[in-house]
Image (tube, rainbow, N blue to C red; front, side, top):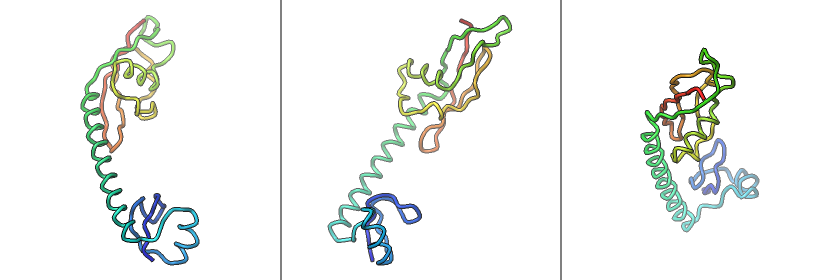
Length: 149
């Protein structure tokens, strides 16, 4: 039976894919859970339009992510922290603090969770290289300069 997936189904396909499945699988699993519908001519046209929409959105998102990556790459942020005479911090600079500093710089990083900022807690004064993982497999390298407060 030819069906159109309405949602992503593990081990079968993504939303709006047209698949050929057994009648029992379609009737007993996919249709009751509203994961698929029978592939009619109208639905096939709608599916093609939806897929085109998804591709356009993905291309636009990739373009925006590439722009953000180029803005972030090589960007330097300064964070002040309390430290002793040897330059060891009393606390540490964590990814959440780096994200907050990036937000204060008016950069469009609202969509980047702190978990995507790859660094160990910074525990001393100086310049530190930090990698930020972005969607679409892109990454940017920024410099975090920790200064004594």
